[in-house]
Length: 254
Image (cartoon, rainbow, N blue to C red):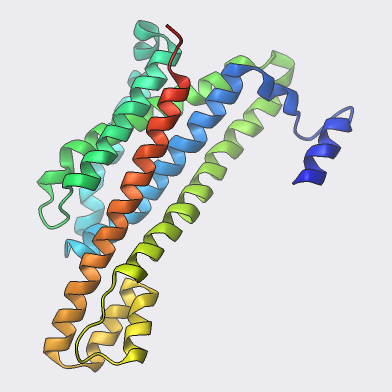
């Protein structure tokens, strides 16, 4: 990374012109896209597992449960220009990030995968806030660049979405796995080999239950669901904190 940055700064026609990031609107738009899209993709990725593994939903039911999130995201994207016209771009971004953060906080504190109507309202709020941020963040990136540099800006914009998605799933997935492994307690009657297998991931736990007695299997599944729920709570809380910090950084000066 150091060699890449050093070389790009010395080239007459760099692949990535870092001078673009000197424009505050450009850099804040990029930050918004990375933080928001990373949290959104991670939420989609882990929500499907949370609903199935903790809430007992089928794959079809879990997919249908996420449709309100996607629908609200589309509504947020459509209404983003009018929100920005009314409140200004920075206030709109700040408010949408704060809304997304608040929704994740509610999911972390009060989410119940077994009773789907409970997380429905925060999912709608999360989708709406994320939709606004994605559109206005991308618009900030493109609007801050000179017309002759629109190709560079578009490339950075697209890369920001992909980078945010990759970083969000990788970082938050690591957190979820760590919390799950440390939170899975020893189960009476379960051998050390089976316990290590169950620690790898929740799907392995279900395989282990086929090789033990029904009582041990029930205790193991209960412990695994509790540990995975704790991991998902940690992920939602960390994502909410990251979005809140981003919103504070973007808050317009008084």
